[in-house]
Amino acid sequence: MASEASIYIGTSGWSYPKGEGTWNGFFYPPGKINELEFYSQFFNTVELNSSFYRPPNPGFVYNWVKKTPKNFLFAVKLWQKFTHPKMYQEATGEEAVIAQSDVDLFKKSLEPLAKAGKLGALLVQFPPSFKNEAYEQQRLGAIAKAFREYKLAVELRQRSWSDDKNTAEFLRENHMAWVQIDEPKFSTSIAVETPITSDIAYFRFHGRNAKDWWTGDAETRYKYLYPEGEIGELAERVKAAAEKTKLLFAFFNNHWQAYAPRNANDLKKALKLPYEQLPLNLEFAPDNGDTKKGKS
Image (cartoon, rainbow, N blue to C red; front, top):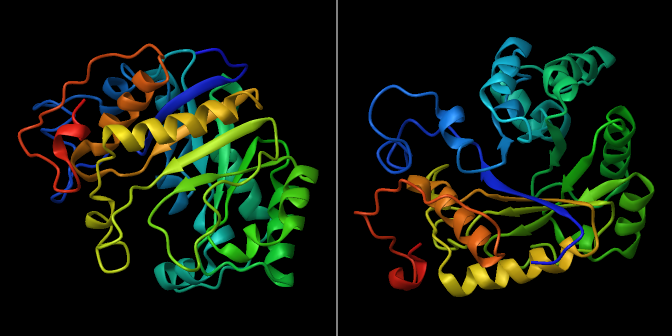
């Protein structure tokens, strides 16, 4: 596939050890293994989601650097204290009052990745309740300023942002990529395709499980395997963005029973990129759509 962008395809997170949606026995083989080291044999990037709950220990991050190949890149989700103040308060009992020490703490956790050249982007994900209003615009601007030395990608999930033509201009001025998302569509959903606003493109594919999206738990809402036709549709979006950028990330977040690595590999095939055959256990067929179309 001819394109100017360097393309990195992977999954949102790599460790799902518990619950019905576990990857153990589906992607990871039985026995004790280093999951990240195993994962990095098949993909050249991963989105770190544990950083959303707390800044990771730099010692752990250094070990991640050592366990992955030289050209492997991490995308890191910003701490919820910056983006989800209500969730942070519910989890900690503390108000999400941001101080310079919070910025410094999070940056310190990223140092091993940055020094090794393995920090691909910082993902700034906001909740659907984050509307395009004055206070929220100020918060977004403050984050852009605080973390301006990194490649930034912002996920806005409320249509008040995509309905406003000034949003794209703001993101361009602040060198922030507007994350392209795929998820079930509702009346408040953001536009399906948003403009390219920096020299990187960033895709997040959450699945299309509308039935369980609001009523399911953290596992079942992501119980969705993209069939072949939908993978082709996503591939066209990725190809179009790759022609306009220098660096492109695409992450699958439909993590139920290792659907995400399966679809990530499907996308690599659709884009005619090199791929490794996955060691997936496919005894349990997906229950969304035509399962034959969804097979790797």
